[in-house]
Length: 341
Image (tube, rainbow, N blue to C red; front, top):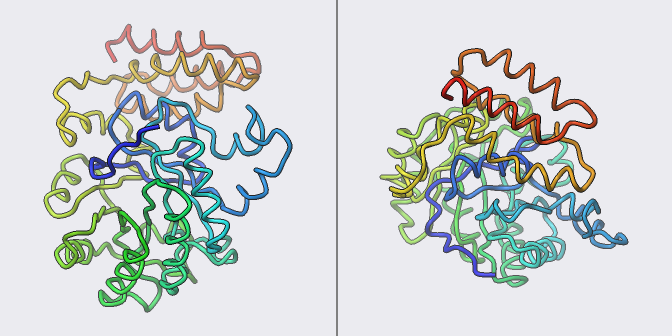
């Protein structure tokens, strides 16, 4: 398939474990058609084992559960975790075979579990190893290979060390650097604390773009509004937002118009999102799955709606039933439409 030029990705929704699954991504496609979306991080070793299983890639098979997606999710990046160039090359080849638009290496997650696997943010201490991984991934497929990382870890947080990391990895073939503008403390802080306690240092990311103007630099961390992203886009190539998108989805309804310049982008309401999910939900249910896995992501889409609490309760009860069908979404959308939302 033809892949979208990565230079067009001015806005992306960050990969988030337990949040950015296929259902959330399809719901976001009701809000923005242009933004780059990411999978949750998938461990390269898990992909290696999954592809060996009988019928692994069939609907409901292990591999399909790990990396399957709906065509409406494009443009879509597969984020992988690992430190083994061979396994990561295999993951990159799988990403290409499955039709992803990009493959991204996680060098930013600070969780203890990830550190025990010797990947994630701790790899910032090993730029040469990251470079070997990126080179192997780039050789394994024609997809763009990108990196998501921190500005530093622990006491290794100088601008010089950040620049050395980026230069080393860029030389290996990384096509974009998504930089979380906080360092990570590998001991003493959990992942949630690492998203808030280390101070934001946007100036380091801005300086990185000044010093390496030919590299594509995307900034991540603490961006709460579309206006804040637009301000950053005067200084860097892209803006990545995570929790603020999940918690306030309709806050980003203007992304396609205001960041991507799509004057034809239709107005988005809460009911637009819910009703837009019905065709996708039909296919999901036909494969023997349950509605709740989709409906659970709609909790925040009614932010600011009068009667939101009652609407959420009604949706939760109805969608939680074992035999819940798409009529639940139709009724939920109608309830919003009747109130003009």
